[in-house]
Amino acid sequence: MKESASKTDHKSSLDDPVKPRQRNALKKRDRILSAALDVFSVYGLHGASMDQIAAVADVSKANLFYYSKSKEHLYLSVLESLLDDWLEPLTLFSIEQEPAQALRHYVRTKLEIARDHPAESRLFCMEIVQGAPLLNKTLSTSLRNLVKDKSTVIQHWIDSGKIRSISPMHLIFSIWATTQHYSDFSAQVEAVTGKTLADKEFFNTTLANLERLLVDSILTN
Amino acid sequence: MKESASKTDHKSSLDDPVKPRQRNALKKRDRILSAALDVFSVYGLHGASMDQIAAVADVSKANLFYYSKSKEHLYLSVLESLLDDWLEPLTLFSIEQEPAQALRHYVRTKLEIARDHPAESRLFCMEIVQGAPLLNKTLSTSLRNLVKDKSTVIQHWIDSGKIRSISPMHLIFSIWATTQHYSDFSAQVEAVTGKTLADKEFFNTTLANLERLLVDSILTN
DNA sequence: GTCTATATGCCGATAGAC
DNA sequence: GTCTATCGGCATATAGAC
Image (cartoon, rainbow over all chains, first blue to last red; front, side):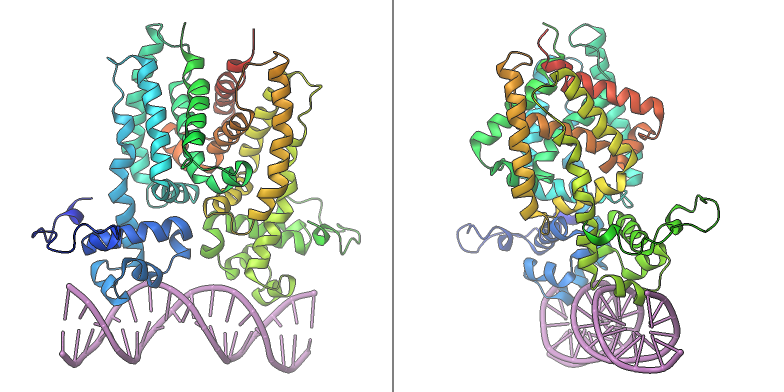
């Protein structure tokens, strides 16, 4: 997060006109983080090898170790660099908003993220399933406070009669669980339906159903 | 699944009166499967080592290889031995049932399984997150058919006006996602709430909220 | 900063005695 | 069936030239 994005900020492209070779256009540090994300998210911390990551990032393995002093350190860097972005959508909740609109917007955003950033989603999923050995501290401080904070907002909506009575925390958990399911378990979803969130119609159907289940059902009408 | 349970079925205990050392009371094959489940579910296929599993199962590593010819083979055995039990609850759905009761029972059962068999849940989770390289065939045949079958049942309930209109498949996905969330992401849930499903009151609150969100909301009243 | 070796250790798997 | 000993390979990490 911190220093990873700055460093060599000399003019970034004298090179060929913005070629779609996305990763190769990035600066080395970013290319490495991006490659590490892709590989870790598929094979996990232990299943991934530094050779693989070096190959994907298009750097030599030795060079990779020049940029990050160990495999675990690289893994942690990836997690950290993603964490803020990952939690950001929830921070937008505020009391002034209309609950219907705020909740619908949140569900939609989370589902869009599930569609557009499956690697991030899977990486967090694997980390947490394994007991979050590296993220535990963050979870029980930042995340805990964030959730408590936003639960208060939801509780406020309940108290003012705008939505039905429900446990705010469980509502948040349910939104996370259902939306992330479509990226984390996409192998299963695809095996069963033949579709992915990348399919526009499937995305819309999914969103409509989740909104009905998670939002419409708790609105007072 | 097949032969793993039979084999040496001579009298199983002349030994001390049913001592709580659960695993050591089991026959060797079962002890190995049980140990493998525990270790694989925490560290994943690649993160787990045969030494670890041997230690937990209380057999020598060489002996472990006598019983299963490779690490991957062992991993597959574990998955296969669990699969039927894992899918069983969904098979119980039938048209004759009252939807309210059937759905509530299913949600409760899934949440009980999440509480009582977290290792199984996590193992499947990790396997599927990584793209289900070993289960893909099963998913796109058995599971696919099962879900289609049970979707028909739910659709029938909708058509006869017993529940509101909703996509049966997305409803099933949502039930899976939310219930399994409490075991697969228990590290996160615990970091935020301080509670686990093992806590009786937390279990009841969770169940009540899920029933409200997933069942009550689609009942016609 | 980047490269070509290479050290080092762990782990899956086997050999072979008992 | 169970053990001890060990092979062989792969992967993390480093040394050291350029």
